[in-house]
Length: 285
Image 1 (cartoon, one colour):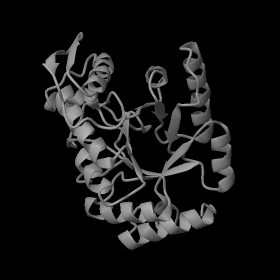
Image 2: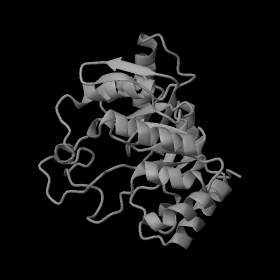
Image 3: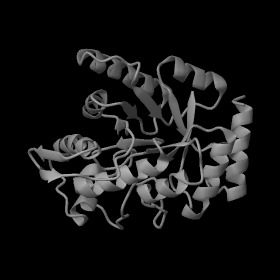
Image 4: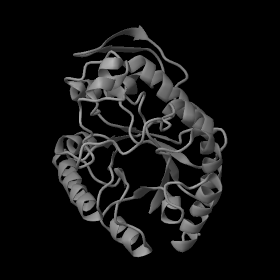
């Protein structure tokens, strides 16, 4: 089982030290969340809580993921970085491809692109992007960005984007694409790419989705051998819990180890101590 340390809601000033500690301690990666702004008032309910309220307080840090990954890549040697999740359809494809490709280049192949289609209509409106048909635009953007990341000249003609002959450098290493989301539409999109990222979810619910992904991959004539599944789990705390998840096909866990020891108010020293204790308690060393 691989373990990714989540940066969600973390003080940006702590990120470098947490990344260095995670790298030194043998963690596999870091999960980097994405929001551009946090609007005070929303019409759109948050879809991942029962009451529709957001999981974070106002003035929580949401650093730009590509600036953050570029910085963390330069102070680590082995950690991978996965976005949890980035919304391509909230941007234009050329700026997004440039930022992602540059971060991947600086990370030396340690970047995994986790994407979603988004839920907050007001944030799309603010950034001048259409909320409707964002799923179809996401699919086309991923196709276009893959072409932009290839060496040489690129041309593209799609439903939403038309690209004259151009080139974009530097050419990044291969960037695997993992799709986030819990709906069947999200799972179908994930099955067409390189992996799936879950949200906070129970082990049973996650394993049900793993089985659905197996079915969808098989329908497309694709195996699971080169397909990655990463998710946080709400009810996994012990080696036995993680072993069950792994035997069911979950390869990576996104977690905040300090939450088990110091809680959400953990200081930077407590976060690093939690990273150490978690590995020791799970006999990962």
